[in-house]
Image (cartoon, rainbow, N blue to C red; front, side, top):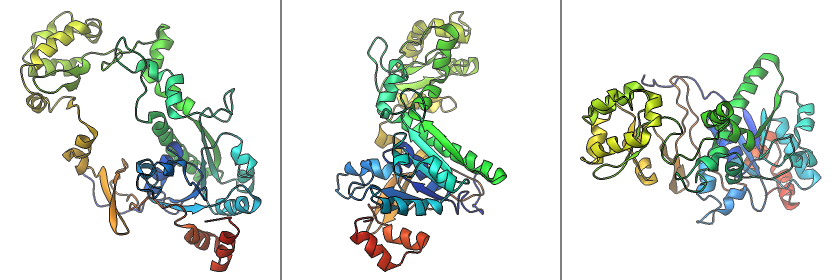
Length: 400
């Protein structure tokens, strides 16, 4: 179905979010909210800002780590260590619908910005806490980052070559999944608020996300009592799902169902494999995957990868691309998944948004903010402070 010209405004248009988060999970969530139309006010440390700003090769605090998760936000720098800065933050929250923070449990409460205090002042507030281990449990006060949770959750034990050691996935998958859960939870809480008028406290953590993401691998252990072994490029249970050689480059095939496997056998001119008693059912193919791999590989190495992929256009098969190849692929560009944002005298390239609506606009992208770029704008437009009052706050070191 092709998309029509949008006629509705962004779904979160008019919503205001105060964002105390940094690094990936929280900022990615609030960036998604900004894509959906929310006004996101990013509160940062006056000197260092979001910790991700330190990874900036150009020295402007907007390196790849920051650029990836902070477009379309307004940045205000507030010193939260004292009463005046905390009061200022509370005033901003009083004008907001959603708060997102990813400090360790207890930190925001010590600043007078915890969920209990802020929701007592405004029961309609949706307050989101993202932490490593959650607001309760024996590890609640421990710090933790995505790679550590990959190790602790069992993910690393599943990743890596067969017979090799555990391997960390280089992408921050747990952070990314947590951000998606945060966005969906916020939208659900806002829907609930529209019905009964009350906000909510949402307690999200990397540990819960990682355990939930174990999916069928976790269930394989719960059902059988045996943890699945590392399977390399193979699927844990199904076959043929693997990386296969060709006469040129390897290609990845995922043909686990009887229907897909039969079509693959036709393409590689081996229809006999579909009726071979070793491979005629999913369980037989899984049990005899080594023999099946040999048979398929023997056929594939006779022709170049490009030719096979043309013949397999109707099947789940693909080239193994580098990141530059993927980001320049016609099908990626056609979906607007690489975008340019005007930024003063140049343009910034960023990844697009997966949100695609037929009748609803996604908010126009704005460049990720420089530290404190919008301090005056936010204080004047939201809190109606005069230029003299803002100058006074700046002189006292409360804002930058």
